[in-house]
Image (tube, rainbow, N blue to C red; front, side, top):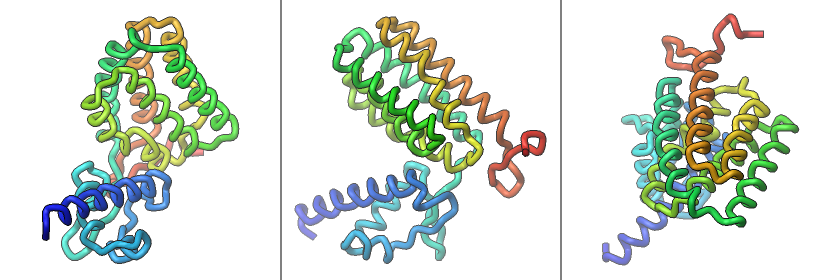
Length: 232
């Protein structure tokens, strides 16, 4: 294969990976579901090679697992993985706030306020998936203030664990509770209080981690379920 051909296939594989990731995060491919190479190739109109490469990329992110003779399936992260992702996100977003808040413009603030308002409207209708999408968009926009592409790339590698996976794995999650974690962050942002934003972010992730631990346990089969005391 020519060098140009190899580059084209790599670009195509990246596009397929992005499409599959969105399908996973939207719930089209829920945890434990199989992703069939031939079917995906047919849907996107390509050969199996870019699909196979895309799946390897998703495996590297921890989103799918590829099993010998069984193909690829969507991984279900356990509670510990999700909590570990919260710890790392808290550090990344704290760094982003320290870099970004001093350079924030009025337009940046307006974007964050609009995203927060949209998240709250979604919460009022009980749309957990929409809340998760706007939650991620709010945090991504806040992190983008830093203007640091490396920081953003590392943060995005955690997105499957810190966005809709939570809503898929935790079907009892409360959309309003999730949305209501964010006003404290936005209030500190409005004041351009860098350390206040950092403190609000850390509190946000501490509360989310504690809520997850209190509401869900890991059973021996590896599935996440409600504890009996919380069942209703």
